[in-house]
Image (cartoon, rainbow, N blue to C red; front, top):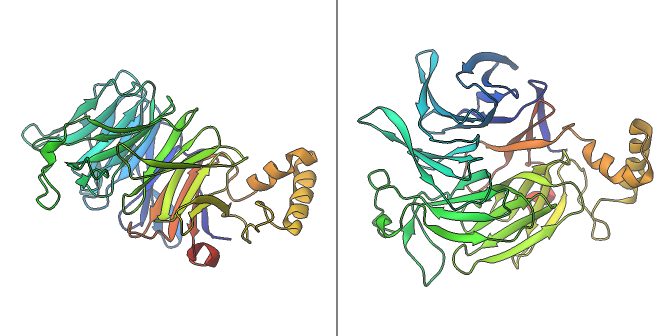
Length: 389
């Protein structure tokens, strides 16, 4: 299989993030603390415990260039942590929220970060040098329910994708429990600079809604941009994944339906390859063919690719799944498929997937964490069938 390493850090993990050189990992063990582990002589040792939040931490992101950690919590607060000497020093971020902060992500230039919340708002946070604190501007009255995930376009200043609607803006995609995916402009005067090659950033207004996608009839999660920024992917709680090209007034959208439990988060391994994780406890691989048509390929925990006659493997794997499911769990034949797909490295829902190594156009290694308290490192180098997609 593609599993490279399995680490049991806690009974439950809500989120995790890696240091720029991947020598340390920060995680929340389902409480109000961030535990930072460092790899010392092939063993992970807890070296820091970040304590400032009052409730469960729902989001962590570790900036690749500035080496800063940002956290978001159900206590409606966010902190930016800077390593000063041997101590992580927190700086409070003024979010002005009356509901829980649910997710957080640094922008590509790391001069801003976005926080999604249960208050139906998105906070775009930036640093004010003269006051020495982090403040936020809010995107209000755009969402009808909680914001479950945020994702910055990989190009910090970009052109919208319609040939008749081209102006420079800084794009942020969001998903929400109102079933919609939205893309906003987040340009802030004095914080975001003009890009002479791509136009004038001031052409777009802060909070301008570029596109609203009404593709799902259920909650939506896990939005991500492709490496080029030309494709947007997100998942629904109805066991569907959505792919959108030409994000703008006339987007091209398609969806892939699968019969198993819903996904919760996704990651682009390449421009035509997506890894999805969620309630089936096993990463799922989706790929686009030469025509740009997306489809489900296989579970990453399977040794063999799914044949054209069956989405779930060969007759041998079917028989093994029945034997494994009945002998270990005592389930009926109707529940065999579900038990077999879940009987992999993770034993509970996977709620977070993070790339490892250089975040370029190809992701060969990534990590997943879940409610089982494990962080699993996956390597695609030996998955020849996936590398050829």
